[in-house]
Image (cartoon, one colour):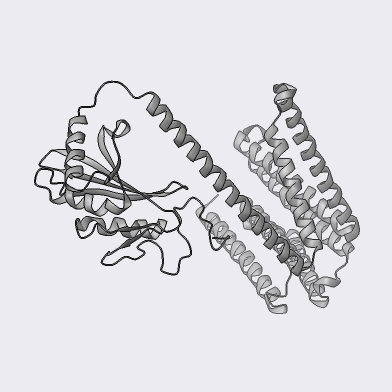
Length: 448
């Protein structure tokens, strides 16, 4: 073949390609002009795209055929047949587009949908067949490589899956809505039954792992509690709002009374335990003399000689608190004894480290812990007060460190320290009702 023939062949191929591209663009523009893009539904768009792809594949095939033969050898009959096929495809695409424009989307019946799906499937099959034929024509059968075989198999599987999906959609479109609902209900019921069976199986397996006697007392309690809550809700739902409020008030009153009774019982048990501990301590008191006994004797002797013989009700060594010498004062001589301990030159208890009150139910008690750096010794001073009217002189004039501890005892126990410079509540508000550290304390507001 001469150079002139090659050049003519290349020109013919380029002209055929350009002509096919121009024809496809023209068809796309005509279709877009006939109907706005928004109104064209998805099914018609797919049909138009399939027709366009068919026309493009046909043009490609014709271009390849033209490239395989010199320009002079292509006969006029084949050219006419190709042009007729192009015209026929274009007319079919236009007809489908016009039909879609004539009717709204909702009026297209199931038969037309099936026809459109069949046409689409037919066009896809034809395109695949042509592609296979072209590939077979380009290469002998033995030269087709493994990659192309895999691609062909994948295309075949994809086409089968698409056909299956379309068949399901068509079946769903053919069934009335009521039948679809029944099918969904059946599927949901089957899934529910399957889940219940699985749960029962797991429960049986768990029960089989344990002896029968060990199966959850906790579960039984939980079930009983749930039943009680359910009954309470049902009863509350059956009663008017006024009756519900009355029931709540009764329940609150009962809870309050129950809490008070429990507090009293607890306090009584605590008092009983303290008495038993004290008796056991007295019984188990070791015969060995405490190293602080001589200092206790010295302090007691000094108090009796300067304050009076009846100033102290009791004195002892507290074995449970590092053998601290402990003085139990008469309420009338409490301030006098404290003043003597503070200012006596030999004793000089200049540091107050602790002051607090305690409710023993039968009486109130003030505990003061003092320390003498001169003697290198600590001492505890106690005084018992009447529980109904707990009043005692303030130690602030002797130790300024007693200020806040006495306010705290007043705030939480109601002990009144007269001659205190500024006795007030420091933790609770002035309008607070009651004293929370008393054993018989009941909240003013039950819900708090």
